Image (tube, rainbow, N blue to C red; front, side, top):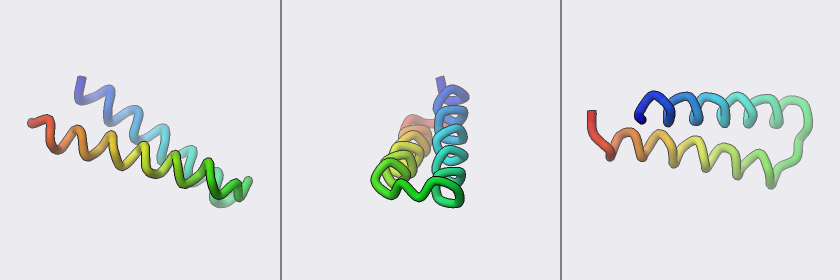
Length: 48
């Protein structure tokens, strides 16, 4: 389960980076960033 969260976080961060540098759709980009951070926080809180 934890590896799935990391994969989701990495995919969302890559989408955010691509969006920032290419598309500049600010609302969607920041939602992707927040979702990636939430996935990482769930991993940290969820245990090791």
